Image (cartoon, rainbow, N blue to C red; front, top):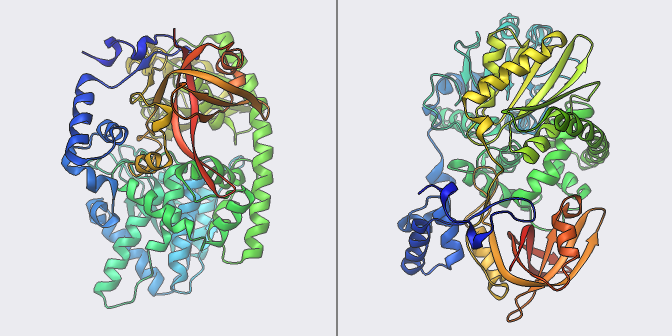
Length: 586
């Protein structure tokens, strides 16, 4: 029986947020209980592992992932050996190297990885990050020709796979591409194109972001250097950058990505990279870093430079070695992030109104507006996608063109659809991957391009998707939600894209306390009347039906669903629920 036909968990067919709760299948329950008996692990931990597809015999290894065990052979990627060989030759031969990087976190961390590695050879490469508004995404012919005149090697990171013309324009210099975006039928005229999403690749490493690809390239370069009898740069110390790029680019936390992030968080906690220390301090991080911090505190600030400020600011901060310079850059990025939020709010409100007027039950939701800032359209598209459970595209119009960004839902390949439209001439430019993509469209082709995209996405089933179910991993009583249990659950992480944190339901609970925090958050204390009470925080709850329902509880009892976390305050640790949904218990 499929999950959609399965009885709703606790009979919740429509929760406070309008969602149907879907619990573990009978088979998942059976496997979880068997694993608990075999391993002695708590049942909530076993439920988490079963949801991740981990067999009982592999539980111990999964809970303690090592880079050594999970690191793939870099040479399993096409062009890896010649790419690493060329980069190593440039480093040992003290040649002139330029790095052409994308303006997002993945591009910034990829560039910083190479800068750090080259510093071992006392080399400082030229860093070039295109302006989002003036130049757009990826290499352009003018910039590449100019870089080629002054450099022997150009390394394109997080971009370049579709840049045939710009790479051809780099006459006199070798070009190496280290990327992960969806490849076309032909490759650009580069010396090497390393990309797990080339069409002739197996797809086994398709989950890597660009920072992961760059790290594997440096692993291969170090191997070649050792075989030649040379001393090699330390790579383990670079994993904080790989972790940040992986989480911020929403790469699935599966396979080697798990080890990258787990090990990277350990490295980051040592506070040895002055750029990340400055950024952590300005973001007021007062606990050991987690994937949440990477995705929601550090990542957006690094991104802010590329979105609405100086494009190379994030990459420069991440590769900086001067604490004073790092603090100045971190302060600037923090201010830019504040400005970005204000711009985003304005664009989001206009885009939401436009989508509601057009209707949100088709295969694609989209909005386009005059002068909408290109730096926030991707974030707004993500918000629309979350609100509608549909692929979403948001476009800023300027003159005869519009530049936009799209976000997709599971099972719908938006990047391929956008690439198809570009090949058909309805888009001036477009590309990306399954879950995120960018495009440029002529103003007079906006409507037909969106209509064609809707048609392509409908063929993938995007129009048949209903409201997103809320998947829950089982029941838990407040007294069982201890700090020790949460720490054990976290061993099954890190959690994020492709590996969501487990979500538990606390059944038949009484709300003892509910208070507004900030503008729209709700702080709650609840209990079952038998065991200990537990605190919860529901972010943004007052912007929807969840907050008012819990504030006006009038003594009613509720099933409460959310994810467990540890709240650290003045050195004390207490369990806390990140409350996401609720339903009356009657």
